[in-house]
Length: 200
Ligand code: GAR
Image (cartoon, rainbow, N blue to C red):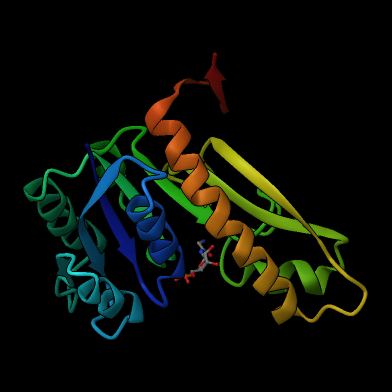
């Protein structure tokens, strides 16, 4: 069974959706460790309630490379094969990305390459787009940038607020993150330039 390592910073609803997909047998994997960069992240508490191993490495005074080396060591110690970023709000060092080649996934709440960075749902709403959505992608050394695995579209309704739009996007995030993981772990695929190609 594939061993996943989850990195999160906050609420952890994407982590919970994946944990539930695993419990329901939709994804054949196990969550070996959940790592948070904030001790008070609700996602860490939720992981502990599920009986999962959680870690929150100290970051005070450490540069990115040194901090990330702790993460690499912890993930290796727990035999992690795939790294799942679930609302992890720190940029990863190049060394971290090289440590898990083509094995780091992220979910972002916009149709990339539109609206990378923070508060993507609000950025999209304020821009006035008629369609937004979310993207599951491999992580490379640039922010919200690597090859795209799956996207889901969410239309903006005339009476939407940024928050109501974000809530509908989140429901799609939960759906496509589990589905992407399931496909990557069970189907044949390759990365062709920027394109993730699933092969029959
Ligand atoms: C999610 O909307 C996720 O797409 C976003 O943070 C939120 C975390 O929610 N991630 C990014 O913006 C990454 N650039 P969650 O903690 O409930 O999963």
